[in-house]
Every structure is written in structure tokens, then in C-alpha cells.
Figure 1 (cartoon, rainbow, N blue to C red):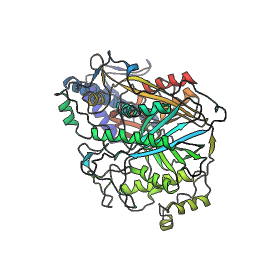
Figure 2: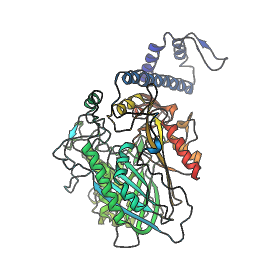
Figure 3: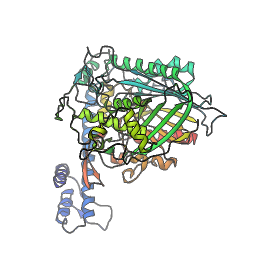
Figure 4: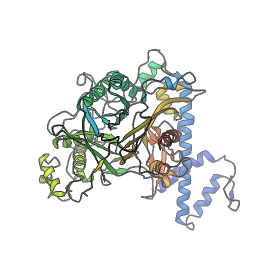
Length: 612
């Protein structure tokens, strides 16, 4: 901590030698000739001052550092780059853009209901399809969320020798009220720009009209080991050079991959429609705090796992489990190797669907369809201790074990221990309980797991979507958009201002699940409140709604991190109250900008207030 503090002081000193007198808030406090004198006086008083006063000084200094960092990266460097580098031919003029005429937006339902309509029941259909391009294995594709220019053409194999796959999974839901069907698609991808979401909707336009589909929502599982779906990891330099010198725009995301995602998504929805059947829907929730953790202060995370289980009346039909919880699927990401050594091989070229593939394998073995919809992901990632159990293996193997254990927890939520033991056996004991349970430190997944009730969900489905224009005030992200490295629609405003179109939505499933569907990765304090929400100009989400609303992130856009403007850090530190240390923080480098949180959440409140 002392080294960090000295570094902060050094930066502040270098930039503040010529600053004028610093006068603090209260007239009764001392005045100093400069920031340098203030810091010197504070150091002299270090032995006498209370610990909390010293901590407050450190927090103030870190905030100064963060402000300077934001200024240098965004205002100084970002502005220079945007001045020097011209727009691609794909950039449109804000003043002439007509949002209402922007195609392939689905507004959802005009009318919300609170009770089932007569004797209506739930209908649900499930479908899935691969989104791997047809030439995968012959042509190399860039890995997403990794170092740029890392190309590969091979998927990892699972323990049964089958190659993993990247999928589009879809469910179509209908409450029988006649107000329309709702589609949810989950892609095995890092993120998908709103402009690309609309390509999927365009492909489904006739299908939607024929089947009374009123809302089509595309989310990403957010795997960090799939094909680059956002453009920045393929050939950013080449894209920029081409797009500033030619009217023939080359987007960063490989068009073959986009085409395969669109085709796979369409097939998944068509199969789900063909699969639709009536049945009952059940809801259960359990705490998985030992399996997720928030890596960056301020710490605020939803540790619950939420499950919807659809049980068809027709016993010949396959039941479906829809699961959501917040967790970055990056178990098989930055430190994985394929030689079993556990060593760091940062250029491993194999692709993986991470833990989702293995959770689905458990589900399928138990006789269920499965779809994972990303929850309030924030900076939350997997905690692998319980599933790892000290068993040797590379990082990819940790994703395997984590996925299996998550699957077992989902299946076993409402079972007693005897039924869990039977389930473990009938699904092939994928975690090796019988093999490893006597090893020191091994944790058996079903021991100590609480049993939670599954409650029936009444057939009430409400959803309302809203599209809007949002400023991209992160100049680095604006640069990636304006040069068409990323697939975002970019609108040029006055001066050096850039904008894009995004969406939010409000979803209700029975009385049980109320959801803010967010286009980014929302920091948990904007949902829960607490010290991390200090200075946020709006009420926090649960405060405003008075409901235990949950969040589904990365829905219908890939807007990056969504932070309280008061904590917006592009490269700096955040104080962690739990550890008493300062955590590194660079997440807001990947963000639409400081104003995104207010824009997104205020638009969500407009929807919520209009229906509730």
C-alpha cells in the first residue's frame, strides 16, 4: 500500500507543482500554498492522525490520480486520436438519423397484465444450433477477448472426445394471453453489437410476423474464448487503415462468422417454434456465493442463481431449464494451457465454450434442454475452489469441472440429499465423487447444499423494450466505432461527439422474476446501492422500483461496463472496504463512457414507470 501511495503522490506532485493555493471546504481548516505543502503536512501528521483520516487522505489522492488518468486517456489522448483519424464511410450523421425509422426494433407489449387470462397456460419451445462457420477448421478465426491477432481453427474436446461447439440457444415463451410470443437467444460469444442484433431480427422478420412474435432479445453468454464477435481482436490496424482510405468498409468482425451467427440464431428460433408445447413453469433460487466473486471494488454482487424449469404436459416432450446468474465465463481464458502443466501459455489457439458446454452436458444427461442467460455480470467471475477440489489439470479442465458442478447445483436445487446422490449416479458422476471423495480437501457437491422450494409460476409474461440514442463519451470506444473496427452503428454529432443506438427492457415472468435487461455489464451497486452508489444522480434500481429486480446483462447490445460516474475509472485504483486495500481498475476502458449508466437506467425507469 505504501508503494502505491508513493506512486500516487509522485504523479500528483509532477502535475501540481504550479497549482494555485488549495483551500479546503471549511473556512476553519488550514490553507496551504500548494498541494505539495498539503501532502508534506499530511505526512508529518501521519503518526498523530487517526487511521481513518489517513485512509481518507489516501482515497482522495487515488481519486485525484483517477481523474488525471481519465483526463489523459480520454480527453487528451482520445481527442487527439479522434481529430487525427477520419471517420469510415459507414458513419452516419446524427441530425439526419431517424430513430423511429431504424429497422428491426421490437417494442414488446403495450399492455401489461397481472393475472392469467382465463384458463390459459404456459407454452415454451426450445431450439439450438451451431454458430461455427462452415469453413471453421480450414480457415483460422481470431479469438475474442484475448490478445489481437491470435488465430485458431480448433475447438477443445470434452472428456468424451467430442469437440466443443459454439451455439445459439433459443427459447420462445407465450403466456396464452394473445399479446404475443417472446424470444430469447443466448449466443456463445463475448458480446454482440445492437447493429448485429438487428441482423438476426431481420432474418427472423417473416417468422416473427407469422408467429406473432413481439419481442426478440439476443444476449451473449460472454465467453472469453470464442470467435471474435466484436472486431477488436481480429485485425484492428488493418481495418483502420482500410476504412480511413477507402469507401469500401471492412468491419472488424469476420463476416463469415456474422453470417453463421445469424443463420444459427434463425434455425434455433425456428426449431424452438416447432418444439412449442404447453406445460407448467417452476421457479427456484439458491445462493452460490462460494462459486462467484467480485474482483474489483466497490464490491456489490448478486450471488443468487435463478432457475426457471418448464415441465411439458406431454411426458414425451423434453423439459427445459433456463438459468441466469452473473459470472464471467473465463475459467478457460487467460491462463489456460493444453499440456496439463498448468503453466502460462498465453497464445493457446484453441477455442472453448467454457463452462456452459459442460453445464449443458450434465443437463442433457439428466434429460433437460438448457439455456444460460448472463446475469448481473459486472466484474464478477467464477470462484473455482469447490469445483477444482485440488485436482491437477490445466485451466480448461477447471472450466470443465466448474461447468459440471454448476449443472449439478441447478439440477439439485430442490432435491434432498438421497435424490442428489441418485442424480449424481444416473448422470455419470461427472465430477468423480466416487473416485475423489476421500481425498483431503475434496468437497462433494451435494453435501451441505441447501434444499430450496420450487414454486409454480402463473402464466403471466410481460415485456417492454425501448431503443434510444446514447452518446459514446469514451473516445477510445468512439474511435473503434467510427473506424468500423467494431460493428456498432455510429452517428456523428457536432464537433467530436459520437453516438450510437442501444436498448433496454423490462421483463416480468409471473410474480417471481422481474428483470432489468441491460445492454452492458452493470456494476452491482447500481442495483443494490451501498457506498459504491454514492454520488449517483439517480435512485438505485431496487430503490426506484421497490422490487427485488434482477439484471440480465449484455442483452441486445455490447455496451461494455456500466459504472457509477463517481467511480468511473479508465486506469486507476478503487478502495476495497473488505480488504482495506486499493484494487487495480481498468474496466471502464471498455465502456460507452461515463454517462452510459445514467442514460441506460433513466431510459429503463421510463419503461418501468410507464407500466408500473
